[in-house]
Length: 89
Image 1 (cartoon, helix red, strand yellow):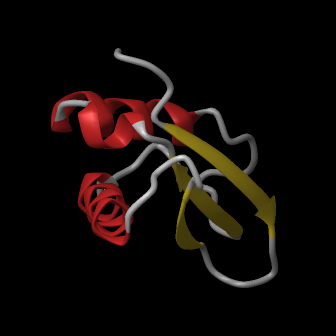
Image 2 (cartoon, one colour):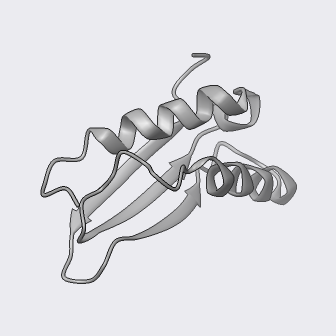
């Protein structure tokens, strides 16, 4: 792993699971920010380890998202989602 590429904020909610994507201010240009968001959206596995039914997620991209390999990014996302406690589907 190059460096930490994502941060994850989550909270339990009454609504079904949903996710939002944000980008750190350290990623400077609009082109880079859009690319980081696209990589995160594509990297979130459909069968992610986050199987908590009622949770709201905010996935924050750090500059490392642009440098990390896609496989490494997907694995980091999967590991991060698995760390969320709560009822699993």
